[in-house]
Length: 388
Image (tube, rainbow, N blue to C red; front, side, top):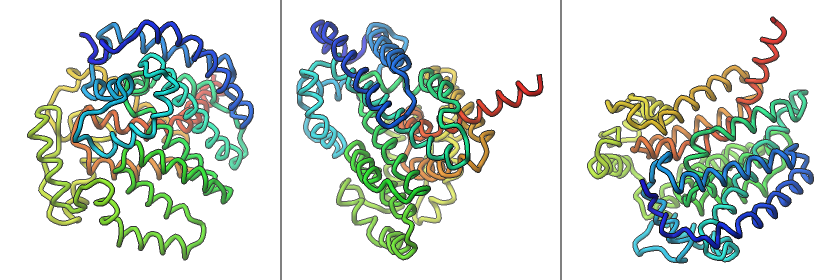
């Protein structure tokens, strides 16, 4: 099965890619050493080349299914153009990534190099945020680093959505920067700049995330007066801000309309026809919507055989493994990450209606659990080792 972006591939881009890759490996190695993240140049090199080779392989094979959005973003990258009547998120992505498109010479093969560079940079910041938690709990900063790198290499969603023309790398970067800022804010009363930068990236990647950005910014304030004032402000002004940024109406009826009309439009890959007239109606449906979101494509609110969606079914098995590892890690070290994951997933689940979309959109949320999971797996290893 040919990829929709296949006609946009250029041999010149493939020829220049190794030079870009070598440069970015050096940059990532320098950043890792500068902030003492612990990523070796060997690990960075293997991860970078592995993901780029996966991009090449999947571009010429049917291993990874063709995603409809890829042709849109490939067109933005190579032709510096998007069709009219696109969403605000697509428009913001177009403007935010303009410097990257120039530096990649408007060649898809080189832009993917930038995507992988930003992806690995995201992993570095996710791991660096975990350093803070480990240090506060008297643990070795690099405990479980190799496990984290392995989990990052085999995470199906990373392989599905990072080395292809999509905006998921951009959203993951925003989450990783914001998470680092939130963790630093919680433990050290610092990190405000990172919270703001990560929030800005998230809004440019997907404007609907303004809801999560404002909520987390309010909840992680140390000053109680500021915190409660911001929470009150969120409750009062959020509908107005959301409507202005997205041109969507902030109401239960509108959210129900979006879900239900999408079920008619996208057919068998959708789930969750709802009847919402009040916010209490939404709250009643959240448990099942939440489970469907974090376990998709398992049949919770639909009857489709998940094995027919093999790629994302593998992702769901992987995600369950991560959830169990995080649970084993213990609440003491995982509480902030779990809070961010659970609250974000609940908000995401209200909006999500597509089995594949759920897998794609939960990717950055599962990603922030990977450091915690690596700790849980390492902890289990030492327990087993001591018993043998």
